Length: 89
Ligand SMILES: [Zn+2]
Image 1 (spheres, helix red, strand yellow):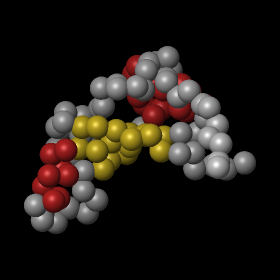
Image 2: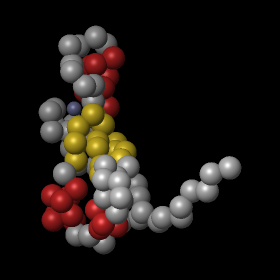
Image 3: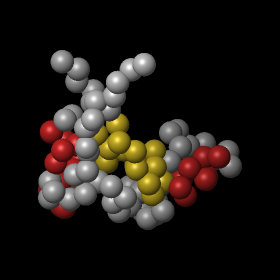
């Protein structure tokens, strides 16, 4: 049994403080990718956490937040995932 640390990541500022990141996924680009469009990485795109905090503030929620539009096609049919810290120790 592994115990998960109880970290409440509910704001953008907490994500950044703990080294987490965000990436987005565009449903429209992903749909093209699935249809066989020669698309290198599907609908995924990086979200610049610093830029998002600059726009929304560190206390902005990251729970069910509005994802930035897709940088490739401009679609707002996007979602997001939180990525684990890349720096360990
Ligand atoms: Zn897109």
